[in-house]
Length: 237
Ligand SMILES: *Cc1c(COP(=O)(O)O)cnc(C)c1O
Image (cartoon, rainbow, N blue to C red; front, side, top):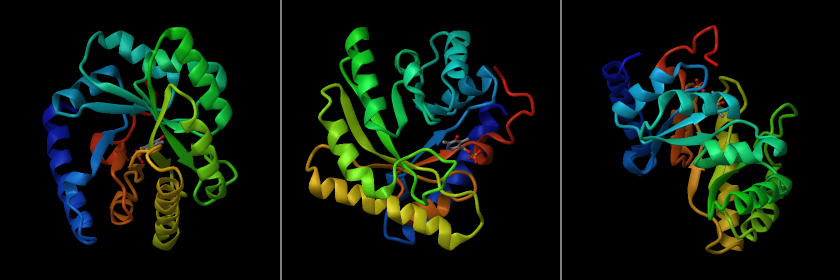
């Protein structure tokens, strides 16, 4: 996928976002696209950056680290969207500009500690919600979100920019909508009870469900396949 192909796909996707946003009286410009480059070769990250995107998402520390090294100084920010183990918090801070998948106070504390060690003054994060309480998925139970976000917000170097969720893998629109609206309501509760301590980002929606996510209030859709094509069978690493 080259820069021009990515730009063309991005235009079509933006139109779909516009229409979905308009259905609930929002502007499409309120919704950003985070291209998810996991599994793709480093050249895809350069093409994405040339197509005008400012950030990409990756779900493994080692893979993103090797891409950054391979690319040198490509002008793009890196978001961690996969599960982060505490023992990789230090390397994650070196590689990523934002951690979109914080799912515990313990991970937050570890990031705080590593930030102190590395003299990183601020770590922007999103807190991941397991909105449909799926056993195999990481993320917080919706009932825990306000408490955990409150405790994370006490950490001086952690800045909670909002929430992230992955909806269940299903074509059932009602189930998807429920997962997104639950997450939106969690953010609303955080904002009410933790005034000023949490941002407004709602990272919701992937290739198969992003229009529903936008209708339910998403401010950032995370798009792999629909933007960049199928991931290669042999993952780049
Ligand atoms: C892979 C991935 C995506 C993108 O998936 P597509 O279905 O290819 O759009 C989004 N979010 C996360 C957390 C992912 O791991």
